[in-house]
Amino acid sequence: MAESDTPTPPRLLPEEIHRAVKPGTALLRLQTTPAREGVLDGAWWPRTRHVRAELPALIRALTGHLGPITRVGLDTAAWEEVPTRVVVDGRVVHLDSFPVGDDTVLITRGANDHFALMVVPPDTTPDAARDAMARAVRADNVTQAAEILVAPLPEPAAPRQESA
Image (cartoon, rainbow, N blue to C red; front, side, top):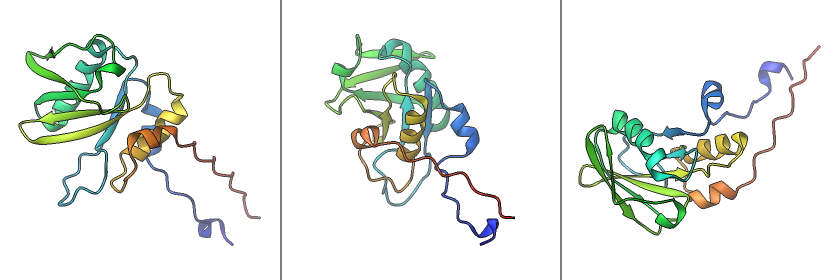
């Protein structure tokens, strides 16, 4: 079999994304579809569990793509010192307590547009975080965030052997 005939497993994200993913990164799947098949709209890997330190950067990134964010729902038991609101770039964003678990935040744009982001724990290894985030942003993902985060890492692909 020629080298070009050997199927290669598809990468979940382009290589440049894998190099760029580090704590503080948010990956979003901003695709308008008539049916919402996936469970999650994106993933976020905060550096810490300090809401006041972490949320402003996420809200700025989301606002740049989605427009003004009005609310963020999170499990207050998973975060340190959660206020009822934060002000980001002069806009008030309300924080709501939801028992969604420490693995998810709910984002509201306007009155009715809701987005669910998986939260990768800050102490996650880079390889595990990249893999989990890639799984979360797949349009066909039907796996809940908690299940993605505990899934084992895929085995590395075996090195391809050159044909003589």
